Length: 94
Image: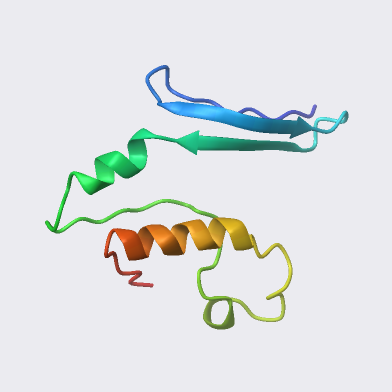
């Protein structure tokens, strides 16, 4: 069997911009805006805060990858995470 599921909580504040799926059930792409997450992170202010997430990308390809730096490099996603780190004055401890 094939298929992809994307599940959200009923109270998850988001907006779907675009979606795409192939006819074989192998691929599903979803472009969404997540509203509450950034606002919630900002409420922590300058207190000690640890944010964990599987962003499924490498922030520093030259340090974190070997021999596949140009494969599946997710430049737009990386830029958004880097901007979040900068805007919220976070540190990538990895």
